[in-house]
Length: 101
Image (cartoon, rainbow, N blue to C red):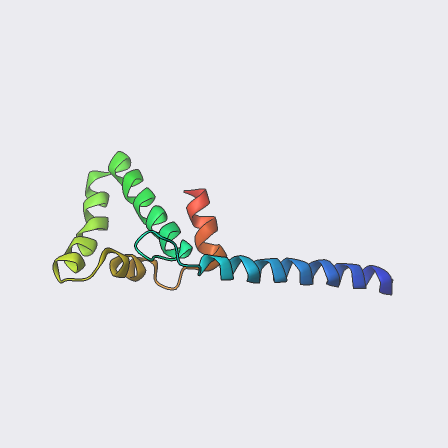
């Protein structure tokens, strides 16, 4: 019983360590505008949502991009507007949302 529990705890620890390493990789800066990997995935996720809305509902698309365009006109960067849209979403949660489309 104890040996089985130790194996389960060992697997759980390995999964958590892998998750931590994956999150650290998401923070690596890329050559694309010095954005992190997480920034790039956030960009892809945001514009996948926008593209989907253009196919589904023109009014919903306009509602989606209106605040983004307003922030851009105020001088915010695309990355800043993206971070506003994403809020606290990041790390593996963001990766999962992006993969699910």
